[in-house]
Image (tube, rainbow, N blue to C red; front, side):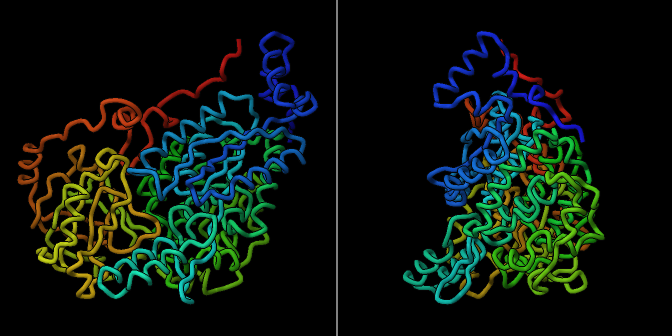
Amino acid sequence: MTRRSPDDLRSARWFAPDDLRSFGHRSRIMQMGYAPQDWAGRPVIAILNTWSDINPCHSHFKQRVEDVKRGVLQAGGFPIELPAISLAEQFVKPSTMLYRNMLAMETEELLRSHPVDGAVLMGGCDKTTPALLMGAISAGYPCIYLPAGPMLRGNYRGQILGSGSDAWKYWDERRAGKLSAAEWQGVEAGIARSHGHCMTMGTASTMTAIAEAIGMTLTGASSIPAPDAGHPRMSAECGRRIVEMVWEDLTPQKVLSRASFENAIVVSMAMGCSTNAVIHLIAMARRAGFDIGLDDFDEASRNVPVIANIRPSGDRYLMEDFFYAGGLPGLMSRLTGHLQLDAKTVNGGTLGDALADAAVFDDDVIRPLDAPIYAEGALAVLRGNLAPQGCVIKPSACAPQYLRHSGPALVFDDYPSMKAAIDDPDLDVTADHVLVLRNAGPQGGPGMPEWGMLPIPTKLVRQGVRDMLRLSDARMSGTSYGACVLHVAPESHVGGPLALLRTGDIISVDVAQRSIRVEIDDAEMARRQAAWVAPPPRFERGYGWLFSRHIRQADEGCDFDFLETRFGAPVGEPVIY
C-alpha cells in the first residue's frame, strides 16, 4: 500500500507555504497555545461532536471527545473538535427529520472549509448517523464513525423496560385506566437509566448498526453500550485508526460500494430494523453514487429472516443483551451466505476479515437462521393506487390479522384533529376501521414527523383493542410497533392519492401480495384529482423555504435534490488566497 507523505496532507495547504496567508494560519494556531511540533507534518483530525446540553443520547460525548483526542495524539495526529448541530430526537420540533439535511450540509462544509485531513464523526441519536455520514461521504475525506452506544436496560419494579416500545404499551394501559399516576411516574423514571441512545432496535440502534454494516465503523463498535468501559476504549481506537486512514488515503469512495449498501439492507432485515432505515439508507447510498431503492429492500425482505430477538420485533431482549450475545459481528456471522464478504471496511480489510473471529453466545438473543423469530425480513414494500411510488410496513411488529385486511377509512387531515377525535368516547370507529393521517409527509409535516403509529382510539383501548391498521405519509419511531403503513409516496401535500381519500372508502392491504389500494375506480380517482386544490406554501423564508422547494419524497430518501451525488459535479477544494 502506498502511504502518503507529510507534504501530501491536505492541511499542508494551510500551514506549510512560506507566504503571508499561511503566516496568519500558523500565528493564530500559536495564539491558542500550540507550537509547530503539534501540527507540522501531522494529520489534522476533525472530531465532529454532536454533543449538546439537551441531547441525552450524547450526554457522554464531552468525555468521549477527550478519549478520541487521546487516540489521535497517540497515533501522531493533531485533533481539533468541531461542534455540530445535535438533533436531539426527543426535543427538536416539529421533527429532527426536518434538519437531517441541515446537519449533512454542515458536516460537508465544516470538513471542506477547515484545514483537516480526516474526521471522526460522533453521533448516534437517530438522524445524526445518516446526516454525518451523508455529509462526510460528499466531502470525500478519510472518516470513521463513532457510535454513541445504547443505554442500559430500563427497569421498573423488576420489569425490564425498553425505551419507546414500553412507553407506548404502558400509555395504553394508563389510557385504559389500569395504571395509576404514581405507577406511570415510576415507569417514567425507570425507562431511561443512563446516557446513550434507545436500547430497543429503534432508529438509533438500526442506523449505528447500518454504519457498521457498510464498513464505516470499527468492528463491533455499534453494539457497545454507552456506559460500558469498552466504549471509551473504542473511542480512543477511533482516534488512532483515523490517523492511519489519512496516511493510507482511505476515503469513503474507496470503502463504499453497492455491495456495502446491499449488505446493510440484509443486516437491517435480520435485525428487525426501524422503518426509518429505508429512507436513510437510500439517501446515504445516493450520496455515494449508488441508486439503492425500495425494490432492494423488498427483495431482501423476502429472503432474509429476522434473527435478532430484540424489541419491538422480538419479545424479550434489548441491545445490552444483544451486545453480550455477540453483537452485530455475531449476527453478521450467521448471515455470511447473504453477505458480500469482499466489501471493504475502515479497518483496512474486508468484511470477511472483520467477521473472522465473530461468534454468537446466546442462541435465543441472536437466533440461528433455521429458528428465526420471523420467517421473512422486517419490512415489506407495498404498492397500489394509494401509493404508486410505494410505502412500507413492518410485518414483524404487527398483529397477524392485519397482514391481509379490508376496512373503511377514517381520515384525518392533520394531527390536532386526529388527536382530538381519538379521545372522543362517541367516535364512530371499530377495530376494522383503517385510521388515516395525511399531510404528514416530507413537505406536509413539515419534515415527515414520527406520527405514523396513530394512537388506538380510547374507546377501543378500553375494549381491549391494542392494534389496528393505520395509514399515513408520516414516519414512525423505530421503537414503535403495530400495523402501521408508512411513507406513502407521493405524499398528500403534493397531491398524492392519499389526498383524495375520503372517510368510508374501503382500503385493502395484502402484505403477501405487496399491495395496497382504495376500492374506487380510476374514473372516480381522476374526478377527485381534478378537484384537488394545492395547499398554500408553508414557508416564506429561511431554511423551511429551502427545504420545501428541494426535498425529495420518501421513496427517494428525502435528501435535497441538489445534494445527491448524481445531480451535481463534486465540489473542489477551497481556494486559499
